[in-house]
Length: 81
Image (cartoon, rainbow, N blue to C red; front, side):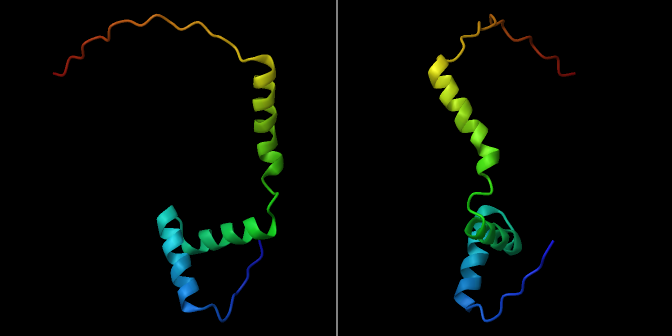
């Protein structure tokens, strides 16, 4: 894997990145990596997600499948001793 060093990044940009990463539950490094990948390789997920689009079109054409629902029973009582 390659590494990159970004110099002369304005303090407000670093703070905005920190806040964005925190809001998403990521580290600053992970958030910066995601931003760079999205900008540099915008179509990288296309083949991975293409099958979902194909499945949605197929479902629309065919109309889906009706499956029988199992009958529901009353839940058993739990013994907590």
